[in-house]
Length: 108
Length: 121
Image (cartoon, rainbow over all chains, first blue to last red; front, top):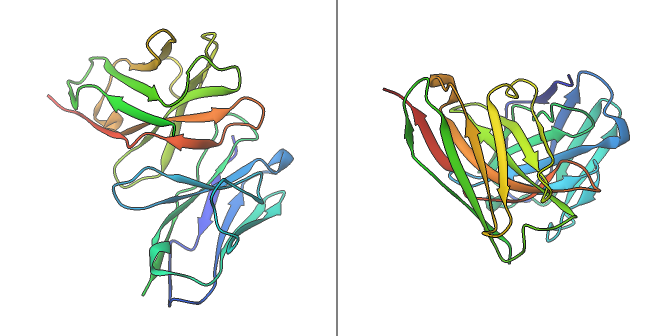
């Protein structure tokens, strides 16, 4: 079973800055089958990135994903107040298709 | 625009069976390209994959829940369902239905809004 650890638990930035979120896997994620989601309070998660670096439909290019093997990164540039949310990574290389515990991003 | 909507009881007694339905609109559930899935989020914790079903009825489940989970599909009414048996307080969660592709792997591109199910006597 692949366990995903996200760090840090909480990040705080000002508008216009760049945030880097980390997701580390307990073993290699084959095929880079790693996705990122954004979840705002009271809402369902929203797919941002799949295949470690492919943007989902409608996701702006200031949001990007990178990484391979066991280390993956979500980068959000030119932060906006609307980016305040919890971000989850998820691996789908093997069952069970686990999620990370999330990183809360605060934009103040 | 594809929409998914969960429905079902918000309160279930311990040891009983949780039953939820996800109604899909804006597209046919009878597609060879997509699986239909359930994901839950327990209070204060992250997300947990439950299982998926294809139009044909082919399923796969999270091994940790497999002994208690049944997912079924009704293509004539464009909905699919979740049954989770022998529930305990640990099954209290927001339950989401979602869609993922067959070819591109198990990442979820459309989600329902979620429904809170509380297990309590």
